[in-house]
Length: 84
Image (cartoon, rainbow, N blue to C red):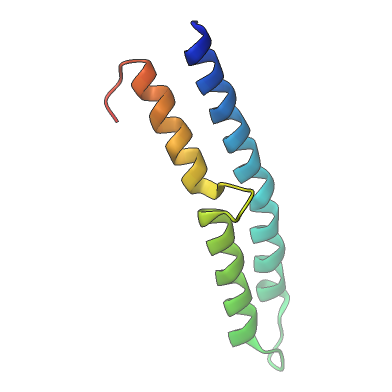
């Protein structure tokens, strides 16, 4: 594997690990929704879940989220000569 392709693969792996790590936040937020009872504020819990999912999807200032993974994946596949 040439250096550029190897760097692209490392970036892809890094972005993938970040997204996988952030999935824990989604599971935690979903767990709160699932554990809620009749007197809990389901609307707020679902709003919180939606916010967490959005952050994992879009990332933030330092994290690329799944968008960062998509970009790294596209670059890696293009370097391999595959259609994206």
